Length: 126
Image (cartoon, rainbow, N blue to C red; front, top):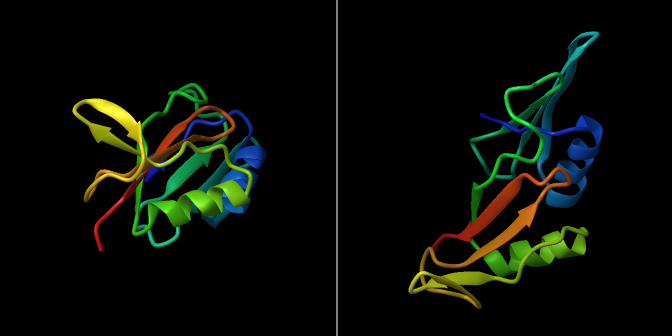
């Protein structure tokens, strides 16, 4: 599980479930001032958890969270259709990012959540 620092749990939950397509596993108030929301990407064994009153990291400071998909173009289309600002497909070429599809393990898209936490989606070979 990865702790995800957000400023507004309800806004973040809507973004991740309605726009990115994560499943909400848990949304519970442990006490009056303590809420836990756990979300899991489709097909993933790893979840993210948002906790009210979590002050170890400021919202938006988590960068480089990475997901893998079998078809990065399809993942990008789905995110765009759901209103997520996402980069074109990019690949690394001699240390520089270029637009387009790279070879195996070398095709990526990037997006941020409303707080600025940064995600990378990588295409894995079939």
